[in-house]
Image (cartoon, rainbow, N blue to C red; front, side):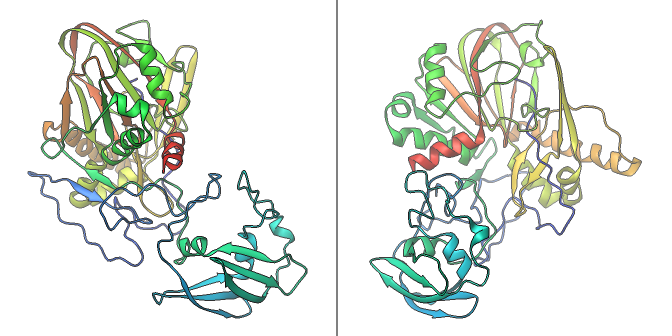
Length: 441
């Protein structure tokens, strides 16, 4: 569909972390190489929280309570000594790292069945009823667990050392699945693909498909049977299909009765879908079932790479697109949908997490004169980069090539065409794709 992205404001009335494509680890000093506009190179951007020394993608942020699954990245971490004070337990690790865990945090994260449900892994503790002055009376390490007895009428607590190791370094919580992001342009990209049979019949193939999609912004599943039924089954390997104003799983071809440019044969410049939706679909899958005609090249542009260019070369305009709230709207099919967010949306750590741009669906708005002119200046730079052939992956989708893409990262488009072009596809929520990756991991 030709519509636009998802909401969530990127602005914060209080102190805001510095914005950027890359936010380095607290313990890591990273510098970004300068950009060469004429010869853009691919950059692997490693996420803030989780790093892989082998260079392989790391799936999963440090751990998840809310996801109902705990994931420990403990390695060979072991505890050398324990020391008590009134507020916290001080843990010295064998490698010299010193961590401080407040007593209330240890009680709140105990792994006994009365504190954490053994099946759902949901917290059962009534945290607000734990005495505020609670302190540990004694601590010891037994069979890979920290065991704590308390100075008040609280049951003893046990926490796996592996769990504690996950939180050796305090940091702001992030729940996104951590997959290294590779920025690309037309010259640097090798089209990411994975065979249909591998995706449908192995978890490794499914994990590779989803990992490629997050790393590069899209991935083709080649050898997909050119039927709607096979394509829908492929999508359901990830999760349920999201319902929108267009339905769930859809088949379509040029149809001027629809209130959307995607249903025409006209050129579609690069855009993200559902800018008029408060939570734009995280991913979209498109599969060309039949094409008899000319033209119709699909285009992909790495909008994170555009953001990187603008941050380096037009910092003031990068800030404009990171702060100006842009409304999107959809009028038709018995609905008038509206939402608003910035083109570059950053999370609470300052990391870029979403690009939301659709010039077709942008609704009217008027800022103060200087701000409005700055917005148009920023959009002009953004659009010039998005429509530069050097930034575009171009390919005529063939039957059998099912393309899943990240609607929060890449701009998708299509050249004008003549003839018959029959498509099918649907939307997936971002959290459902990430959930599937956590389960596979």
